[in-house]
Length: 146
Length: 89
Image 1 (spheres, helix red, strand yellow):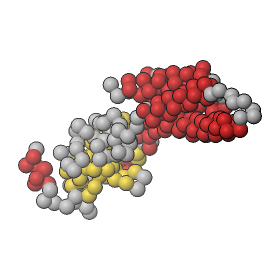
Image 2 (cartoon, chains in turn blue, green):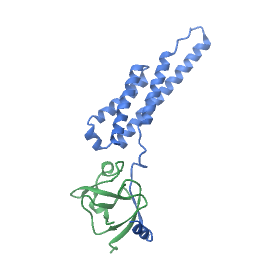
Image 3 (cartoon, helix red, strand yellow):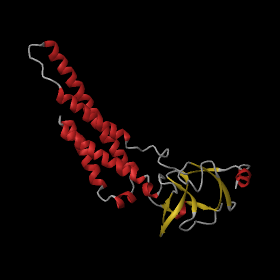
Image 4 (tube, each protein chain N blue to C red):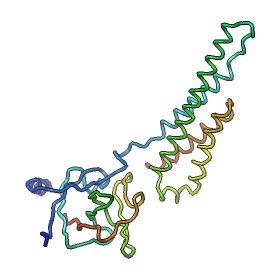
């Protein structure tokens, strides 16, 4: 085999692409998992913030600054979570996976909807639900690799 | 008339463990292949190598040997006229 390959190297050859999802193995559920975890931590932090006294200007400003930043980052990471889940859905999962997980479309649909719920709300319950949905999809992803 | 044999160099990993990136193969331009055969074909302005999964009339479904392959499951079937030849070895 090695001798044949060495022999064939002597001749000019055209290229035949053997594409994987370019390049192989770039798909992973970790980004979506971290994004959901980030949302959860932010919601926890927001719920724990103490309201300052209205005449305490310094603390009022600090409160609004922290809350605003948390909202912005929560919004951003909920969007990342949605985007990463959709990438797996549209680019990674194939028809054969649907045979094994017939409700895969519904799972992704509900997960991405939950990302929007987490954007709209400040609720540990909703953020936990998103984490669970993400863990379930990540688990399916890992199962496909076995 | 073209010479019936041609040499192609594989680029990519979708045919592993059968073919590895950089490996060279010899094809017969006379054969269009049957299910199970490796074929070289043109699709989306690219020359590709995959395995024939099934043939339905003029539509040939191709698939890579690697689980992460991009093939007919994502880009659809290949027409028989797009097949350049069957891999001999």
